Image 1 (tube, rainbow, N blue to C red):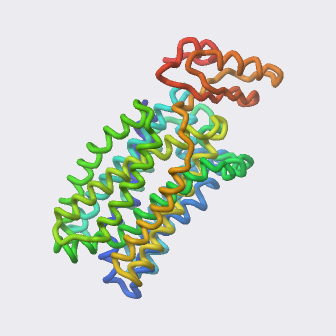
Image 2: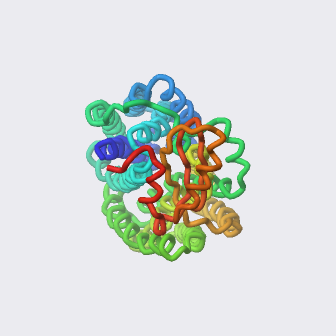
Image 3: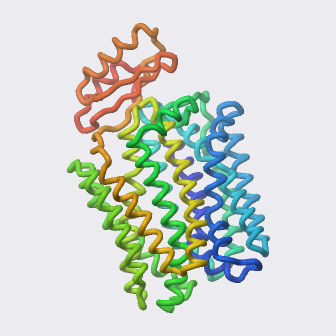
Length: 448
């Protein structure tokens, strides 16, 4: 599990670096030359544009030149962008710095390295561990940003981001094992020839639009939430961390029962749709506003309970609804949609705040969520299956159907796709019913 821990640390410190300015930047930006809310929104979200455009090329380059060199180059670009933003005295310099931060687009290459370092049968655990670290880093960033801002300011936060990038490079070479070999993994990497099949799948498109809208709303809202707390609730920016700490702790506690209900009680669609509706109501609550920290804090607990629930549910739904051998491509398109949402949200939030103030931002977000809610209601109920990979060894093409029949005959296996050249069987399984011992009889590996 050393690989899982170390890769999670790299994901975590980079996520921490990207999001620490989110709860403080919109107020800080007002002091910059050439400031407009629109430019501040672009500065906040532009990392998503470069990240979205470059993450798949970085993954392809890592196939050719090796995972660690490409990841290291991406982290160096992130560090340079952070330092440029830290030293900039204008909004334009910060825009360029944030764009460079996103241009170090290592997400796909990191996923590929994680796949290289994990057996097929262990990969689900590895990816779950990484997902948890990303969520934890986001919550920590929202608390640390305002806390550190009172001592070092936003320029200091960018310096901290650069330091975190250097720490990630050290972790990469000091703690992450070298893979025995690097290969293309259909379950974690995007395959360009399959993109057209993924983007024409109406169910997956609903989920791609969902993650786009979720991050659009997040980034847009945080062009206005800091102002709401400071101006209406008379709660100074340096104190905001005291609110975010209990907000995130409570939101995680409140989220857990819904996660259990969605998976154990097989109510995923109902919980998912309910979370979208709840997020829309939270935006309307912010639109109405409040004159006390307690009122706004209550709405933020509701907001982040729904947000965290959706952030956890969406990738699970993508995995359930995508064919096993197209999961990597489906997740690549999904991830790109997420980053494009961050970019769109920054611009939208800045534009709305510039023309209509905080109320315009929250109303626009509620409208977008209403559209998403209507699309989600018409979504099919997901199958309650998980992706499971099995290394069956390379087989002849004329033996594929026979192998598929053997695999689907195993208790708990709902679907099997075998790629003979890869020697990998991509399965959809019901984990609670799976006869794993029987299934592993067809594997050329043995579990530790």
